[in-house]
Amino acid sequence: MKKKKALASLPYLVSILFLPWWVSLS
Picture 1 (tube, rainbow, N blue to C red):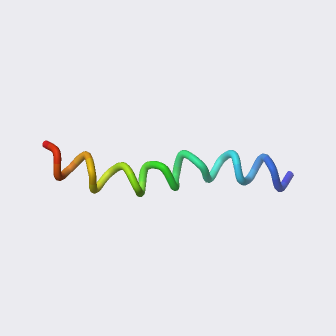
Picture 2 (tube, helix red, strand yellow):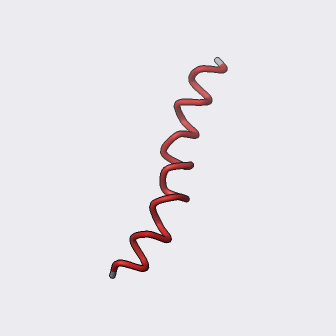
């Protein structure tokens, strides 16, 4: 259960880090 929750939050964390970089690029 804990591993599944961490796996689900991973894309969320990645998008938070990736979004500002993507916005500054475009």
